[in-house]
Image (cartoon, rainbow, N blue to C red):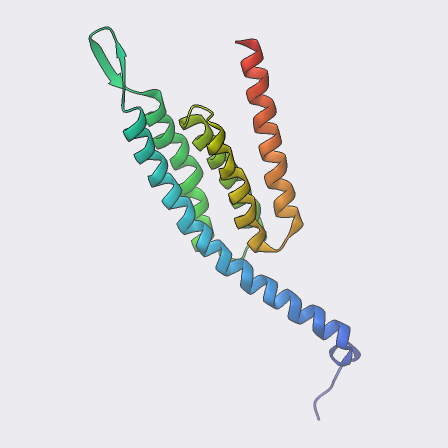
Length: 161
């Protein structure tokens, strides 16, 4: 005869177990979606930089603009490791925080590439809405702190220039 523990008979234990199972399943799915989003944003930032400011001029000589290098290098640094981690270890708790940080830094990159235009700041709100798919307030908190630190650091840099 099969032994049944008191925990498995307790409805609250079963409910909590089912909730955690659904949360883990949801986290895996959202990780895969964010991996795709990271790569899509990366390509979008590089294309935008190539269209908006492909070259910089110094007299009659030109070179590749700093925005293009920023989009290629910084965007790649944000997108590629998090996308690989999201696909290789989907569902891991650390991925959620990595995607939150990377997503908010992508917002910062987009704001930088647009020259600080007001409309580009709306990417922050869209990013927070996407991160809400994890259904974890700690992910939203991490995203908010990253955005606040980024804006504070930019204000300090501008004040010193």
